[in-house]
Image (tube, rainbow, N blue to C red; front, side, top):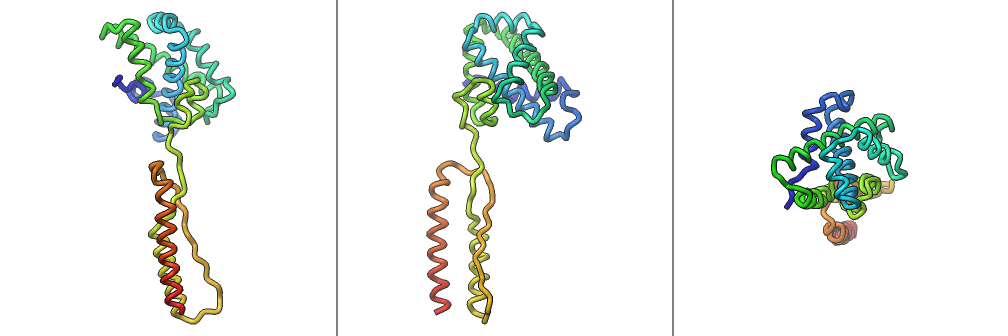
Length: 220
């Protein structure tokens, strides 16, 4: 498995470029730094696939104009959905790309990877990038095989809340009342495994059927 570059780059960006996004709260700054590193690395991988010899030379002879061209292409993409303003995004991407190219060059110089070694390193990053960013990052960087890999937030029935509401319903059935009472099921968002999307509704339905049958017995 290749070394995880995106987290390493994000950490180095935060350390080496303290002025980058310093106007934002720490959590927001960390989010932007990671997002831009994922976007830049995704584009680097796509460019490597397109012409690895050219990119290998660009990594070893960093040209600010070349980096600016990459940044502007990403910023002006119709798929770009960054919260950052265009100029802020372009400047941030140029800084991140410069850092990434410099770090990759140092890794190559130290480890004597050569073009073949860097190919293995960079193409191996797809596995580490999977699920790490929103789909617009991958469509913008044209690393399209990663679209749909980020876990989606899904609705899940709270069983604790169901029990609470059932107890309230039972108490209501045991005392006179003239008004209608409705069961309220609270739906909360949480990140869950994909298999639970199938199992959770079935479990919740079974519990609700059981609770309803108990309720019917109480009122009769």
